[in-house]
Image 1 (cartoon, rainbow, N blue to C red):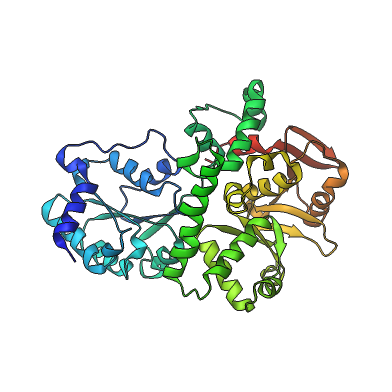
Image 2 (cartoon, rainbow, N blue to C red; image 1 turned 45 degrees about the horizontal axis):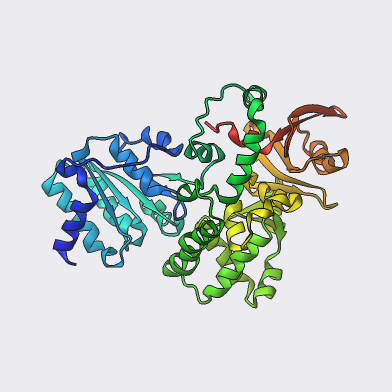
Length: 430
């Protein structure tokens, strides 16, 4: 380890020690407020999320809210810095030279046994650790050894509300969905247009205001997908065929929102089913894909049934598949990718192939079925799966996500609420 180089980096990363201001964007991710509540608690805060979603920015914005000379930031992204020796040196340098309190460590998952080192300092000092990692593959390995000492926060791609805020659209929407709809109705066409922009490029802060289609696609493919698939995952896990891993992810992009079968995928890729299953887990833990199970009260049934696969955000799939913005005019195809934004832990599919796109489990085992119909015209026949789900599980209400209209109706005593996709995503989850 080159101690002089590490010290210079510490000073470079922390201009606040010399009275300089750390410049951070005015825009703050919604997770900022959630984490802020826990900064005075003892537990380690772990911030996870895929590359380029803004973890470093969140950390520096959190630092800006604290006594500046009690904070340190250090990134372990460089290969030469990825050792236990460097991590111990940085911590001890801060303890010996400053009134230590808050330590922000970026990409800590590159350090072997980082969890053991943090556990020792956690148990013997009054330090507060805030850490980040681009993949949960290693960060979550610390769950067992740091049990009771660590809290996890996941930073997803931008929400639609955040995308609008980045584009200088300040919203002060209050009330229920109907009231929010009335507040936005004079600008309905604007929000519909912005929703299309969000689908195409809205997952990542750095390109939220970008208009060059080629740059958008290359940014996502090179800065996000290839880095994760060809570098991050192989570095952490034993990957014999990077090409197959990339092909599997490309399949997930093309078939996003569709049901898949492990053995069919294995045959297609010329691999065994166990390897394909493992690769899917790696992609999921790296936040590139989401997988949804068939809803059933029986866990054994859930395990046996086929699952649905989704690209984490439509813009990722569009980039990998080299789609231009003209894809947004193909209503049927766009609807497939809008569904990825509403993917939940469960969907539902009966033996007769009636289907509901998403199922949310509420309190007291209450279920909320959600059907995605991103189109201009919806007829009763489109609701067969939803109505069958009502009958089977005795639901009180359900939601149909539409392209452009809001209404409520009752069909055979069953309440259905129709909500435009852009409006549903505008309502805060807080």
